[in-house]
Length: 207
Image 1 (cartoon, one colour):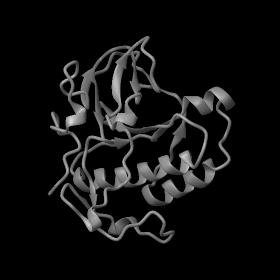
Image 2 (image 1 turned 120 degrees about the horizontal axis):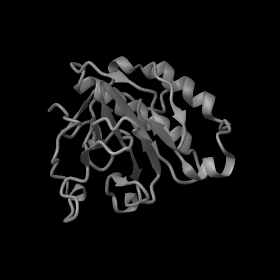
Image 3 (image 1 turned 60 degrees about the horizontal axis):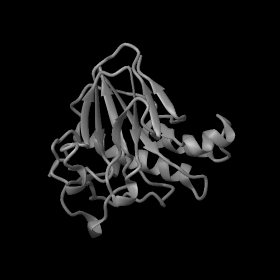
Image 4 (image 1 turned 90 degrees about the vertical axis):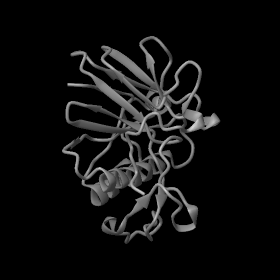
């Protein structure tokens, strides 16, 4: 079945609470807000929070444009339905396919945190909070499969794909905006597979 990345309410138990019945989908026009992934260990999707609330990714909206936020990880169910494997260095994006029903081995694809949509622009983002392990490679893989699936199921939308953002405040607080040692390698892979770059930052300004 086709995947609707915009579906809300999505009826996922972890996307619903008394305070925010549809925490996975929100529209705002605030001048500044953030995204918090504080409940990831409880398998809850990242959600928008207001200015002054601790967050993992700051978004500045000086023109108060209407912005739609939609969670993907822990919200949109996406199963792999083709032999597209991230460990295969010769994988061809043209063979990628996905579905909302059980696919190959009931295996779900890698999913990034979510996206924001404003005007005709879409920005995918992933939040990381530590320095250990292959977090940068992990984020690139999440972008790769999430965006391939989005393009597959929403190819009729005329959207401008903005440079995906990896937000890791821990890394930036420790090293500033210094180039990560693995960054160029992961950038090249994403460019080869999607024709998109990514940027490592802790904020984004909506123009």
